[in-house]
Image 1 (cartoon, rainbow, N blue to C red):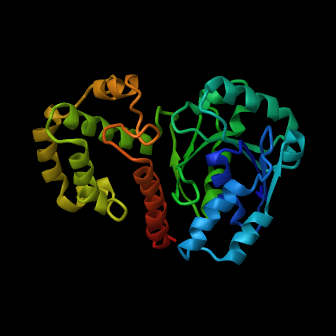
Image 2: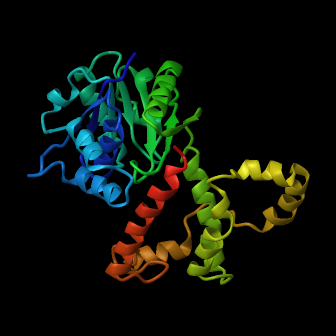
Image 3: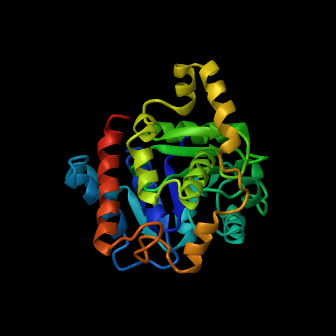
Length: 309
């Protein structure tokens, strides 16, 4: 099965980024469907492309080609007609995702792949209201999807291996770095790793061992520098499994092992201190600082991902 028409359901931040990802492939036509079109529906994709152009990662001609492959519509049947691959990118609410897949299933071909873009939800549960559960697959794109190469391709309990492989191969073809998550576990692969680190980071702050800025600097200027080129398990092999075993025996008994969210995190949320959006979370941020950090992240990702292609 070839994938030549991709339909994205949801025209938010993630949906626009996904459209840009798929439209880089000259063989793919992309439809992005929104319930209500904005006066200039391409503005979200255009602003993403402009950042790439400003950082010499894309030419104006290339940006124009990408936009030429993207169509915007509020007509669901038009968006789904002859679609080979459908990605839903709506809000992270189980019932909304379930109902959406149920409702679109009669409007697509029997061999159309239905992908759900979620960061933590069970793919098996998302597919619960569909008739052909074997064609529902998880695709966890990381934000911003046009800059983060990773896509986790998740097998639900009834997802066929053929659908899993077709999705993986297609994402690889269009330049992503897909990985297969062979069991439908909570948080998949990368989020489980990330939250294990977050749990320990939050504990270090709560216990007064270090403040938030120090914890971040310890990661950014230490192990974080190695991770793009030296995976955690590669690092184990590099230093030796014997040494790693000794270290684990010494440190694991003292790591955070709480099963509930961080009390300090819950306190911050209760006080309305939710980070960049309010100007304070673990640290204080002016609107200018928050904007600068968001832009700096994108510019950094543009630089580092050039070496991954």
